[in-house]
Length: 264
Ligand SMILES: [Cu+2]
Image (cartoon, rainbow, N blue to C red):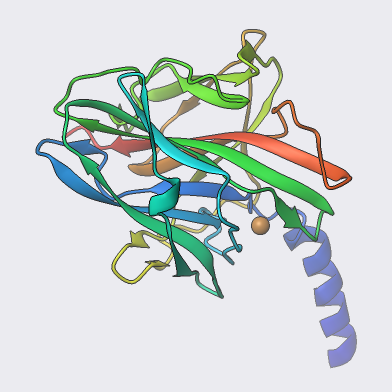
């Protein structure tokens, strides 16, 4: 009887829990403060994980590209990356760190082009071309401009200064063209990143039972109402022009991170 109940429970779990889990992959380009007043050396981390579910972290290979764009000028950061191990709630995985000086006013737009990651459970490669933003001095300088990436999300609201209760909109581009009906997964960093210990903290909320999804309109635009302060990530799935890698399907995704705060 107990065995039967256990089997039934496992079947139910497989049916109801596994397919519904809100566990989208997200490439993180993370730093603690995204609005800087003084010249600052930023601690940056590149981590590949499931931020809302706050479950296992995935192994990153050395990225193909990592740089920032400041007032139209590209500053290569690839050679500054150092390998680290990042601790998730259930495992550790290879990640990267670096320190970046922000001396001048304006927007620092970070871009990582990761090496494609082989996801066994889906038998596909995933490559999340990811943008995140830091502003110094309150002077905007290009956060709303496309960077000419294979695929990217261009923000329509200032990504370093989004308030809880307002909305965030963006345009999904592939080869510079808006993508209609693109599906986006939306997540919030549930376990606060601890950059001293290179780990995610404990989950602060129970993740929703299914993923949060938005679809772009005919102009490639999506909008999401921000319910909580912190880091929100948007991943447009499979929108990039590259469709295969090593003879297998490639999901080339565009990811953007924004920082939301409470209006006090
Ligand atoms: Cu994963």
